[in-house]
Image (tube, rainbow, N blue to C red; front, side, top):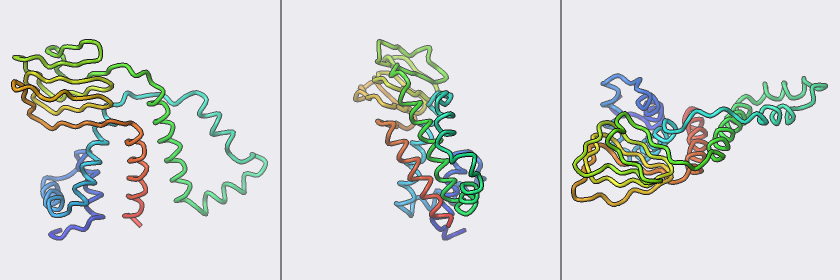
Length: 207
């Protein structure tokens, strides 16, 4: 796989983010990303999306959604018409189901309260003041830190990645040090549209 094609790289990107790639495949993918700016940008977007999805709480779909979907289906007196249409257009049907599921997740997330959410394996040394999260000077926080709907100020050491979703990161102080990557995701709607475009892009590559 010396000259990896982009459609192959797209598949490997998803496997890599899921931790399912062998070491040799990881190296081959990294080599391709270095040589292909388009795939590198796509991988960065996937990585940001993956961080956002992992930070989201698991939400149950609204109770009214099931009734709304059922009412939108064709009348049961003519089941053959729409079932045959679905069978004739499997790709369109799959896309429609995908959009319904994604829209449900987006609505649930959007309707959540805008309360501050802080997650990470080591929050003992993190200070929370209102909607501001502070890594104080002289303290070391071990592991990744994810902050949703809040502002972040790093004065000490963060031995991991920092992800800020729908919030702001105060410019780092001279005493601050972040060992991992800094990711900022500002708008949930960007995530929704990216997931939609990513889904159809994957279909295009696969066709």
